[in-house]
Image (cartoon, rainbow, N blue to C red; front, side):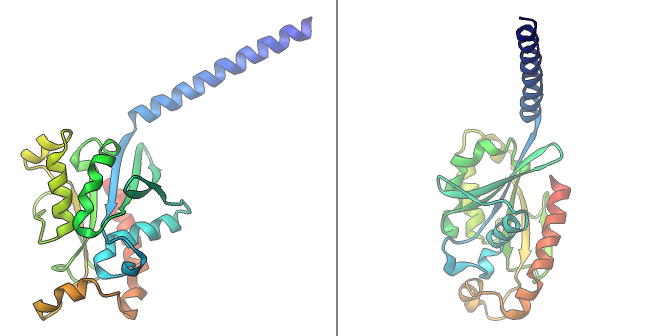
Length: 217
């Protein structure tokens, strides 16, 4: 009988401990900042490592580097990492570039404010290997159809419509690809795969992106 009482007491203590631990976990999750990083690109393996897919290729690489598998949900792929007190979702739209923004309605619960949304995109006006953070000024769409689609869909969002009207925008991280001397070649240029010399430098660029993101999050 005595042993039975001890078992009951031990079970009760364990149950109280379990509730306390989980209560603290839920409290942390509720107070955790939410960030979202979207890597733009075209869907389909044929476009992998083309200049236009710079953002998407980084997310794919970072998923492998972090040993975290990408998961498919609705019209996007994602994986989640925890940084200090931030939950960060790394996202690839499963769309073509011009339709990137249609994922907004499905991911808007993954970040609280537009400043918590970071968009990685290729940039013709930035030299290859250079990364430009556009967090305040200079966040024009720069003729980028993926960015245009994101902003157009944020305007339709009840959650972020007011911020957009106040001229607030997500953070743009421009990944330089350079610009061909002949403007008529731009369409072909952005859809070409990185050449051998450029591919040799991608991993170094990707590590630089990680360093920048860790400062932003």
